[in-house]
Image 1: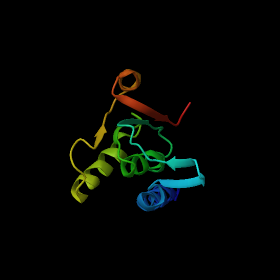
Image 2: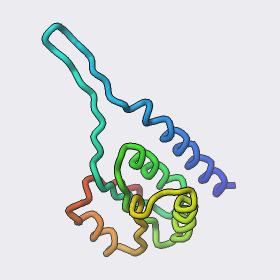
Image 3: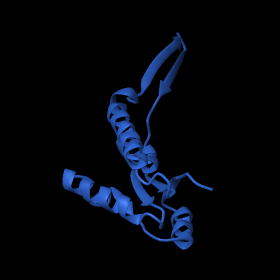
Length: 130
């Protein structure tokens, strides 16, 4: 039951992320005759997602789909306590047509996390845990 809720909540975030291309197109607002405000979406590049063991599907879905539809790639480091959940998820995404290299799964412990967050190409890090 908790596992089913984990997947259901993760799927809700994926559904929300599917609407983001329409919601984050950017806007131009003419504030006055001489002032214009512009809201733009600029991809960051590589986003790292480091996630805990207790919700192995839901928590990565807080980052993955949103980062992807925003034009980024992702390095995903799941908990070493539950490595197969994201491994299987990546297999399904590949089967669905996600190109190689868009999401990169890294298994490991503290050393893997340190390598990811210290890498100069990583422009943003999301972390859930303690």
